[in-house]
Image (tube, rainbow, N blue to C red; front, side, top):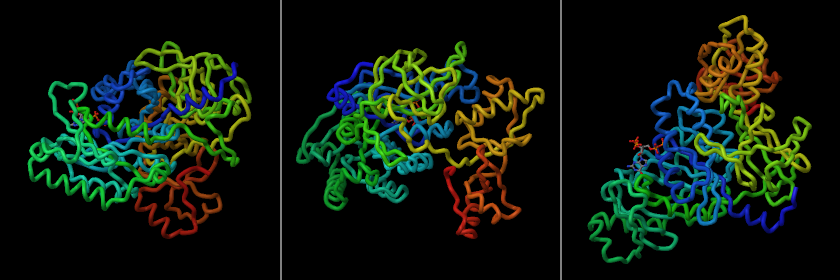
Length: 526
Ligand code: G4P
């Protein structure tokens, strides 16, 4: 492999941003994504518009649609370029599609944009996704969308973010009205007014005029009353709210807040520019050993955060999505996969463009590549050229839905075992009491069950029935605590034999925890 000039490597790293948009369904994630892509020459645009429409109309039978498969993978990572930056936007599916994949995808980003609907503020899915980002302390931007519709008061929205999510929220711009009266915003960082003219006909970019706060037209434009409220808001925002602190932001303790309207494309470019100013480029990654990987290291390192099987039925292949963490990737290079103790040649790295695949020749830390492989990789696998880094393991999460797994064709028990083992290794579901005739499967989203059932039959020829169980949450416990459980508590074993308690409700979990303060209840397996 050719050696890379360190300067070139530093340049490539500094212009990369890997991020996700986290949002409750309908907040406008698809719309914002589309608008962001319009600014960049979407290098690997992935048919996002179509994906959304199709998903809606074919929810129930999406698994059977090959085309849909293509779309669901293609949205895993989009790459686009803007003003010399390479942005890697990773998809986090909406509510119905929620799965452990979503969690793991957030392990592969360096920052996130939290999108809120201005009329609704923080919603349940926002909270779930936010918490995962918070666990990693990654920087989070807040974009309050749909300001062109009737909205909550800006202070109420800021308060909502702070009180529900427990993060300090600092507006970097202040909206001029909302709904029909939405006229633009004031950028508190450079004291410029961005006036917005609504256009009909879905124009790419709303005409925008920048002026100062002393622009005499503002009061006429907004009407005296609204103008007064706006000015008061600006004064309070500028004087009472804490100043934006980049260090707190970088540690995930403070979120800068922006207001806009993705559908009219107002405020999107402003958000993108601020994002590039503030979002971190790929940085050092601490390892279990206490050592650190630096993206500038000469050795190539990467990890697999998502697997998608049978993308293309004709080929029956699997795609491993890999986040590069250091060094330089080059097509055809050979890397070690320490878990297998063997060397693998990366000859077919791809990026997805709708149904099309395109080959990648080179990639850098912060990039996501798809590796086609005949079942070599597992989630969490490390790829490296030098010493094997011991990344913190990708977390598994305590499932919150459970079902008893019944093989409906008893002649297929061999296929059944194989399917259960492989799909749980792949992270499609979690399996408990695996040696039982009817094991229990657990997931964090219904979609995982659907995918699992479909694949058991389609790929392994083992038709299964999933009988829902009445448990809503689970926690790992220590072996020595098992004796403290009563006969009313449901205890199962994960695939490695660790004990897991299943609870019928969050309330039951709480009463159990209150009654047994010395029992450690873990969200992640030991
Ligand atoms: P999602 O991916 O987060 O689920 O949301 P999506 O972008 O699909 O947006 C959900 C709905 O909200 C869509 O309307 C979309 O047009 C609308 N929307 C998104 N951003 C804005 C905005 O800034 N202002 C307003 N007023 N609406 C916005 P829909 O009627 O459900 O779908 P469609 O027929 O418009 O596609």
